[in-house]
Length: 504
Image (cartoon, rainbow, N blue to C red; front, side):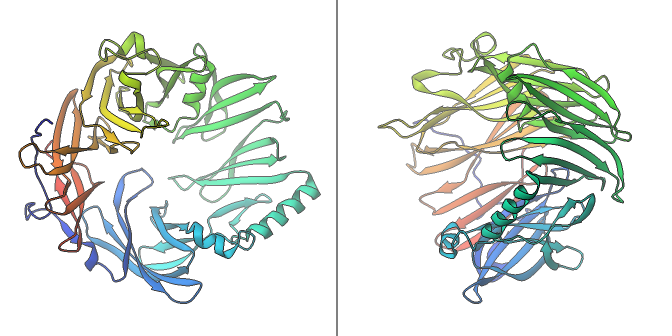
């Protein structure tokens, strides 16, 4: 086994200049979770920590939360009671910069309660100006009026209400409300006929809940035909979406653009010249990024039903033109990855398993893969090297880096997370690898910190576990230019977090 040169950092020996907190000293009770919190621009705000302070009675328990900012300063803390069936909450900021807590239930406890009587716990809202905690019901739209949503009902009662509404009208009235960053609202409304939906309406309201415009579609729908809209972006000028129309099993895909102030249709451009499955991959992709002048969507490319590469859809916000570019395994990447076949297979039954895609401000894309071999009848799943592909603004390959790592057995991936840098012009991504030092014989998990800055690739390494020293470090996303390290130590029994500056 090769010997790895390590930039060795542990929380026991990091410089005294880094910010550090001991989570065990923040609150009392059993530690439950520590996680990053993001704002409405998907920027890191800080960190949410939750502690379980024990059961109050047979139905409720007490929690304490602590919210830190991205510099690890305490922003807010308080205690609250919640249903015993809950085992944790996750947290996010809403447009008012209140902290919203989303509940997660214990499936075992739910089965004890019985599915018929089970009522899903409500969200909670924390006003960070005064730390006051209230139940959060969200906003609903019914009978042409905005109101607070009703409290959750039991599964049995909800089923009765649905049955009664279908019997009375033949369908369910469904509506969802999205509150935008500028305080305005989008309502998506439709009639649910159980086997299909019909009479869809998208409505746009100002911050005073006055309707500005509405867009109607899908009036002809039945069990075999209909229209669906995937909203892509809403900015200060326009509303962007992809409309999929199905008539007699034939699908068409169009970019529709509406004037945000009037609802006037500005563009309705057909998306074609590529396979239907490639367009479908782009339409439903969760890899998209919006900029002032463009929208970038990343997906997979298919030849009929067989995967053959990657695709990028680019929308010009000035002209509303749609450009789709493709990268093929065989034609475009085989020269960089000699054993790559036309469907993404590499050596010995491994294939390129897409882990992430980074859509940069100039339109270029970086694509991160991991060599993956699925579980067989007699073999565990395995992963090996990371393969990093980066393109120019025209989606042409600039370079491919094969980042060698040891074989991992029985786990799906060694990839951790990523972060955009320098106003979305660059990126840093993190993965781990289990290695043995030939000299010390110590087996450690190594964190790999990878940056692509102005086309130049750099890598740093960091020990994040040691069997001999009995510590393990969990890396977390941090403010730009930093990494957050959370360390457990078996001997010392501590749970510490600290920010450390990255070397780029």
